Image (tube, rainbow, N blue to C red; front, side, top):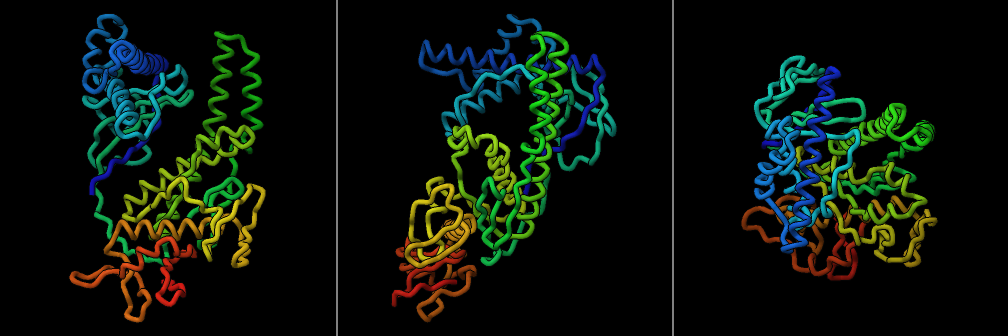
Length: 421
């Protein structure tokens, strides 16, 4: 199996090289914003956006109109236009993103080289820039494709994208090792096997330093050198919190993928939740979207399923034993079922529901792992269905909504009793 993997290295450019980096990053940002404006104007006239290769064709006229673009390598400008084309594709065809927005001038510019660059042992050679000192803290694996130079405050990095061939994963699926994960603010994650991952709350710990830096920034005169220095201090404070959070989530996601044979996650409307100004900071500090992304690609590399539930699945409101539903307020921390009398922590109850629903969804997508009749009216342990073997009774799918969510599939027996696996 061939995967795409990025190797990120710290760059140490000289002051003239850093100034050239800022120029090249600004050119790429200008191309993106200008093409976005042209495409929007075209839509206002003819109700048709400039898409695909038509964006690249605009670069010829732009170089004549704006001579400073000739300072950039041609493929870097093409990469900027292709990024905009991909943004339009994600908006109109894939329906996975919002309408692209103009890029702001800040300390996070980037530009990409696709060819004619060379990665050495302690340096990298880039077209129109030359040789830049680099700390190669780990070797590159696979076939190098592109390199992206990015700015993070006062630091520069080179991200080398490679195609790496790894052995095809052949994991053995075990139902008992399939886990449901309920993410939250009080606890970062509650797992259906009883494990709890505490929320480190890095933003709360670093908030004092960030607030002090932002207050000092607000007192500086706009356009002054002291204001530029203060902006860098704010960027450094935020960068430390962001790196702590990413390091924590990478470690947690790697441990979960290595330990469990499958993971079920709920899909949250994070953008809608962020509109609550009282909890927006705490929600942003959790970064649930990034954590889910880490789990998905690491699970894909390991060949382990990571199932995303529907946004409207009522995991918190449903009883994990009998399936009874009731309204739960945020202050209700214990789920007490009025039907069966279950008393359980609300997050644990939700993780059990997520596990049951996620396991069922994955089994429906993989019919070879569906349970088979054991001959006594029940269901045997999960195993692949052999060629020519009789599959699942129709009652299993017909009674889908009657299953419980204690981490098992529980179709209703003909006698009316629940049969778990």
